[in-house]
Length: 91
Image 1: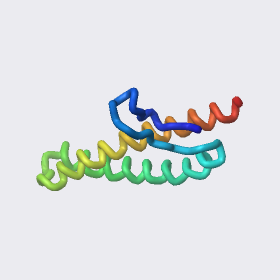
Image 2: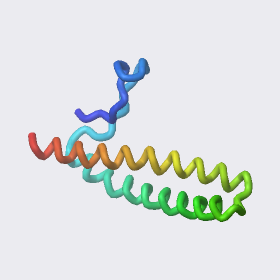
Image 3: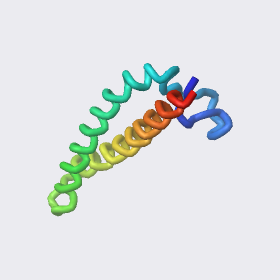
């Protein structure tokens, strides 16, 4: 089994996040996660441009932060999924 870097030992939480159980699961989920990552990056860049042009409203600033967090989280998940696929293929 493959787990996404969250465990009781790491953060004192009583669960583990399962990303995928085998290489086939990871291969199926990876395109979906990459598509969502591209969408989050697109939205982040949109609000980043508005923010740094000096014309952002409070709502647009909040959306910028939301998409930044989403982009960062998805980037970590996609990177981890790619590494898991490589690990599964070595076994």
